[in-house]
Every structure is written in C-alpha cells, then in structure tokens.
Amino acid sequence: MQAANLFFAGREKLVILDADGTLIDAFHAIALAFARQGMDLGDFRRFQKRRKIMKYLGGLREFPQNLRQQFGKQSRKRLIQTLTEVYREEAHLYPGIADLLKTLMGAPGIRVGIVTRNVTLEPAETMRQLLRRYDIDLEQLDFFRSIPLSEEKLNQFRSIRDLFSINPALSYVCGDEYLDYAAAIGAGMNALIASYGFEDFTKLCADFGIPREVIVESPADLVWRLRHTLDLDYPNCPQILQNHPATKDG
Image (cartoon, rainbow, N blue to C red; front, top):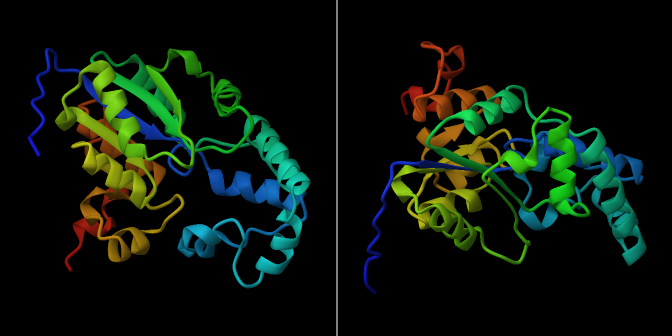
C-alpha cells in the first residue's frame, strides 16, 4: 500500500466537533425523554460504564421496564418523537460551549463544524433549533454532517478534511467516545476526547488505551485546551487543569 501524497496550499486549521456528549448534555436530554415515556435510564455514572448495546436499555434495575416500553414500532416512534421535542426545546449545550463555538466561527483561518449521530427526527433541524436558542446560526458553520449509525466516522472525517484541503496535522476532532478517537487517528488528525460524555475516564483510558493526555474531564477543560491549541485567547493558569490525570504521576 502506498503512502498518501498530500499537498496543501494554505495553513487553515480544521475543528470537527461531535455534538452529543461533547457539546450537548445528551444524557439529561435522553433521560428526560425516557422519563416521559415511562422509562428510566438510570444514573449517569452507570450509563457511562455500560456496553454500547446496553446504553439505552438500562442496567439490571431498569432493563425489564425499559424493554417493555421500547418493544414495538409505535413505542419506538413515540420515543423518538419525544426525544426530538426535548432536544429542540429543552436540551442544553454544556457551560462555555456556546461562547467557544462563536469564537471558533469568528476566528480567521479556522474551519469549524459539527458531526452527529443524533437519532431525532430531521437531525439538522433539531440542531438548528437547539443552537438558535444560544444565538448560533447553524448555517454559519463551515459544515454539518448527520452520520448514519451504519456508517463509519473515519470516511466522514476524511471527506470533511479533503473538502477544505486541510493538512491532517492541523485538524482536530473533539468527541466523547473511543470511536471518535479511532476515526481521528485513522484520518491522521489530532483528537481531544471528553470523559464527561458517553464514556468515562476509566473506560477511555484503561479499557480502550486512549492516552490520558488527550482526555478532557470537563467542558471547561475542553474549552481551555482547544483555545490554547488554536492560539486563541485563554487564561494563563487554568484551575481546571491542576487536578487533571495527565498532570499526576503514575
């Protein structure tokens, strides 16, 4: 297999932001939708630790009731409808994320956009309505991609990078799952992976082997790291990094 011969005319940077669990507090939105359909997602920490196939069926406590409620086409349709309403009207961006998005969108030399596997009805419209509540226009992003569950993110990341002819070494992916990290590395990009989303620090680092240096443990940590990486305005001594695992021995 031959190495890719890539040549780039400019010095633009690329930022690919995963929506659910990285920008959006997806757990609480999903939990609220579940509750309105008579289901229980369980607590956040247990949710993070579950295997993917069990994420939305709950743990041993919640599984029987949730399975009964999700059984059947009409039940699933009602759940997706409720989830759509919650996302569009009540779901929140994590603290500091709206300002980060606005800064990135206004920064020269940076291409920024959002990717999502969101399962609501018309995900682009869902994202448009959610962002509008934070005075952010989805159309002003450089790109938005709704990725089907059956499709790998790797090809999408490469496609976005090639669209703008950006050096992969100047490309950054911010996600919250191992698959985000694997796709970023597979495309030759840099990764920042949030452990406050769908998978916790132990799962990301110990189970999947993601270097702890690229794991961020809070939205504030992500904001600071990305601003620092892209040489945007940032505070000199962030309190949020003092207890970060990457700064500790062992």
